[in-house]
Length: 105
Image (spheres, helix red, strand yellow):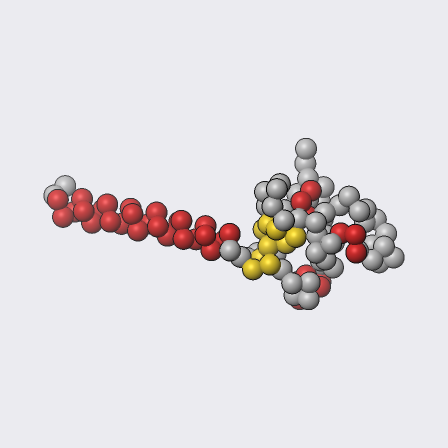
């Protein structure tokens, strides 16, 4: 491999690594899900699990919240995090939606 090919290869590796870092930064800066977002409305999402309509969702319990849902991908100490149901958006850790599934132990 000559010097020019090595330089080109190294530059390509550096560029690919930069793209990965940039995409992670964009994911972390994802917009917060609005309660009036059409998908949020369809799944009855709310930022506060204590405000869920008990008549409409009688099986809902106050202990159910995004942070203890199987679909939530945020870290335990963060107020907002990504959810598999709302791609590209962050949900409140204390939120809830009808897609809630108990996190496996």
